[in-house]
Length: 268
Ligand SMILES: NC(=O)c1ccc[n+]([C@@H]2O[C@H](COP(=O)([O-])OP(=O)(O)OC[C@H]3O[C@@H](n4cnc5c(N)ncnc54)[C@H](OP(=O)(O)O)[C@@H]3O)[C@@H](O)[C@H]2O)c1
Image 1 (cartoon, protein in one colour):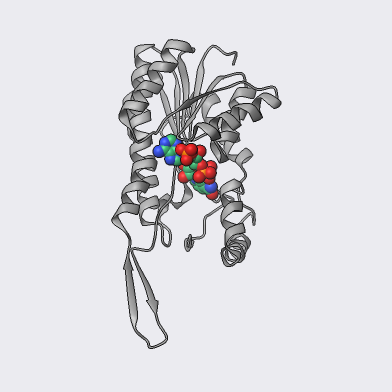
Image 2 (spheres, rainbow, N blue to C red):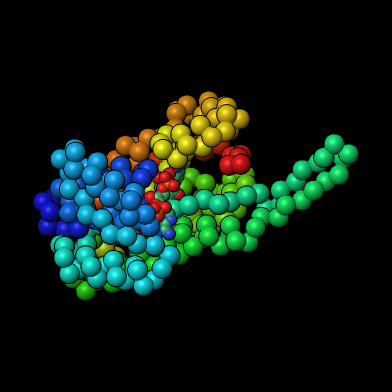
């Protein structure tokens, strides 16, 4: 790929998105990264430049229809047509449906899943994917580009302990993937979901450093995995590149999860 097409990666100021963006720039894509924090994006552009890679940053909130529209207009005005969009931006604010705690006197206290946390998880993971995917598909159709949309899902889409909002959002992202593949296939546009298990990356390291009990619990979970390892950002990037390169692949959910995800995962 020479810089004849643009790859857009959402949520690329850190974590998996940053790794994917660097991979795509290295593969020769004109790579646009977006997210809400200008500071994080600029740091990422500078880090890439030190590695001899060029990234282009645009500040966007994927949950805001107007800024998503402005993002695509900006790319259309200043960059090659969008050939690849990776819907990577995400956030997980899930809890148990009803949290329970028994105090020393045997009294049971209940904490229902806050509606606000349900809403913000669905907003970023699901509505954000819908808004960006819809606007990018429109651009690909207008420019007659036979592009690829890759939606980043999660192995948690099957359902997992204390993951109501996130599981539901990611299951819906996989459903969108199949639906868009059916609708856009006749125009040569392919849509694939990549569904990682726990990623051995920045987010996991932050959570484990903040909570030693969580760190110990995650280590015990890892031992139950068939491969006894988490996936890495590089593993996920390899799956994204496979989706980009395999011209017969669409409507597919590519699982990158070490062979199976334990169902009881605590996040708090
Ligand atoms: N880490 C894992 O173990 C794991 C496992 C399976 C799937 N995934 C999925 O992989 C993707 C990346 O995860 P990660 O671990 O790299 O997460 P992360 O480190 O928390 O990064 C999330 C990125 O999304 C951006 N973002 C959040 N809300 C946004 C919004 N409204 N508009 C634009 N950008 C937004 C954040 O930047 P700003 O805050 O600056 O906007 C950040 O760059 C997510 O879709 C996640 O669900 C992760």
